[in-house]
Image (cartoon, one colour):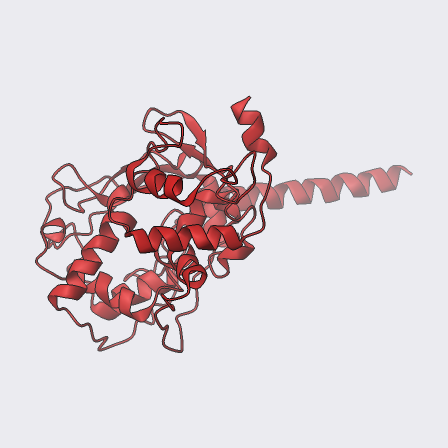
Length: 320
């Protein structure tokens, strides 16, 4: 019997040493690097229409994290990533030293699609990836970043380098990995079908699902609808004040979601930040999406109505 206890103690000690060694390794490592296989000679159409649409997208996709005090995309501190450490969105303007002027069109496309940067490092969990964005919208976004638009003109802002937490490093090594670069073209969605169009806006273009699902750590970027608590809210977010707020349930559950809302009330809430009761509906990290069109918001509404209603008990507890 004594030999068994000695054997178990040795096994426990070995296990402890392995875990401790793994913790030390991850804690002192950087977010991992991968081979950059960015396409060469990536053609981009940069006419006024594509740049204007890219700018509209950037105001909703990029500015919330990357906008600096000068009104450009010069980078800023992100207060909504408490679990992930001290996070600073980088400067993505055309500044020759601090910005992204050395990125080719193909390297930008590869980054947005896969999450792999020019230097091969994986973009951490808080950086959205866009594997389902249509080729046209990807073109528009890159055209904007390379344009003479004010938002991307050189900003002298130089944000501090991020300080990812152990959790962020661990997730980047064991849970989140680079996505496959598409081997086939990604077409635009059928805008005549509001459910299909709404799904595209919510899961591929404007990343609504990431905040409105249950947990950033359990997102399925490749298959958004497989994310835990998809669109049912309860994700823990931080306001600028440091106060924690849970993301709303966007399914049609009558008690914890939007089941008692009308489409007009939803449009007013998304665009102007006003609830049906007249109270503010949005506060950072959620902002009014004044750039969305009526057709886009109505499509989101149609898509949300197509989802199975989910009762989120966590939101009932939070309200209580």
